[in-house]
Image 1 (tube, protein in one colour):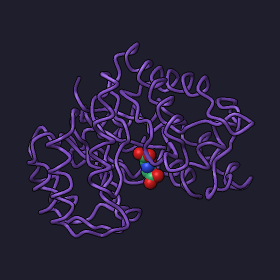
Image 2 (spheres, protein in one colour):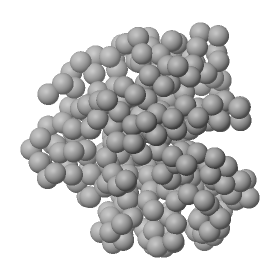
Image 3 (cartoon, helix red, strand yellow):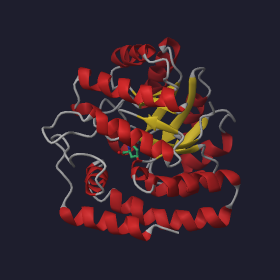
Image 4 (cartoon, helix red, strand yellow):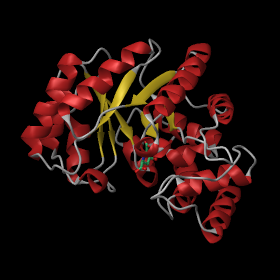
Length: 295
Ligand SMILES: O=C(O)C1=N[C@H](C(=O)O)C[C@H](O)C1
């Protein structure tokens, strides 16, 4: 399976009693694939893995892996932390699901080990992992910046097949990485607002929480850039940028959940502390932005 297209970093829906709603998760997974997504990303930031128990994470993986098996979809599983040994254990545990295409492993957060430490972390992980790795570079969450030279070094490590680039900008490091990366190294846009410029630079696709809604429009956006249909891509990108901004007006994934609940697709808008549910204003604005994103 080619690593490209629109991937959905699935929310973890909760029932009204706060338990994980696996039936709603399964329905949502099928719906986004029906609407044009090429694959699913359970347990990314959007899946709230920090507040799920080990048993809940296993149940989420069982559910999503079964859907990906049935549908022949890409499965990129969130795994890993700021502890190298713990991350090795986490990626090794993915061997239980043969459907896994790659592990999405975040740059070690909080510790701020420096670029050399990050390269050593991922080199060890790649050597021990039973599945390919996709790096998750998100400095505004991790506190660790990676320059283009370090990214280029990581792209050459055997077993590292791609990355999710989410740096809150199209900066020099992103532009220089895209200009000089190995052909087979798949860069995915991981910042919804910047998906269009990253696709224009040659990204393989996007991992976009806001594509839980308007999934077909985001899939068309990725398809248009990949096919070189710039006029269509530009129009879609302009319309969807406002939707992405509205979906991220409060901490991800609270607005995504509120909108899906308002549309009757999940049983509750619930999130777990320290996240708080979306405000009524943010939910209303996102629903309005969705209506206006049609083109
Ligand atoms: O869970 C993810 O993967 C994503 N996380 C980003 C974030 O929450 O910062 C946003 C992106 O849309 C996907």
